[in-house]
Amino acid sequence: MTNPSSLLGSNVRLIARLDIKGENLIKGIQLEGLRVIGPPNEYALKYYHQGVDELIYMDCVASLYGRNHLADIITAATKNIFVPITVGGGIRSVDDAFNILRAGADKVAINTAAVASPSLIENISRQFGSQCMVLSIEAKKVSDNKWEVYTDNGREKTGMDVLDWVKKGIDLGAGEILLTSVDKEGTRKGFDTSLIKSVTEQSMVPVIASGGMGSPEDLLKAVSEGASAVAMADILHYGRSNINEVRNIARKAGFGVREYFSE
Image (cartoon, rainbow, N blue to C red; front, side, top):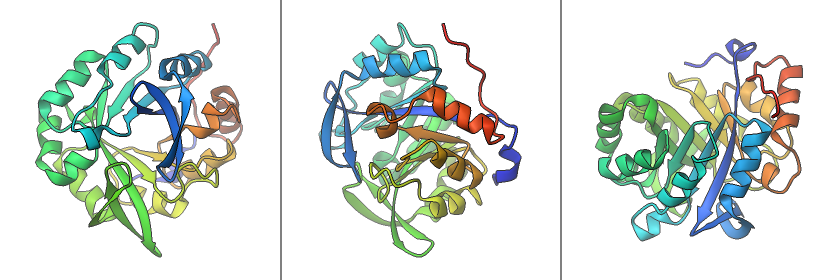
């Protein structure tokens, strides 16, 4: 169980999230209305030079087409970028995970296939280690303190309770949770802090908060509720802030961040 107060003085990870459709970096609102931003690796390299701690690449349409298309993009990215990379979208088997890891990813994030076949979590964790297995959860609020798991990039209901799924996923070997609020994603209205608190209170593994970061100060709220990391997209892609500004605000608030010295 994550204790929010224990995060004071420990390092909060600053993560840039890149949602990909085909060869393009895109951004939507509540995972819909996708708008093309530009070449993903140009943005990834910019965030790397700003000192980002990690990158997340998500293939937004992979579940529709049955496979992940990011191997070439990841192979190209790792020639110039040297931070941990998580890749998700369309990973349906241990072989799929192996191919993405071989392309240069450090971790795989799985949502739709894990819901369809929970044993995939256990199989990937056993094969590559739990630190490699990220359970991606798309959560949509259904009532006070209750959220439903969605799949297929926020398109499909599952009827599953998010908190129950978190517990089961961790029991099966997930080493990290990527927690995306469908309601908040792309809105610039801040994270769903109630969701973050509810999940981190019962999670024994790190939780990445994703969806809704509108200002650098929103990070402070997410971390105060127990998030070990925040995933940023819109706020970075549209230049409304940058990694350096977010890092400095976190540091001033007393949260540990990785020291970064610009090249």
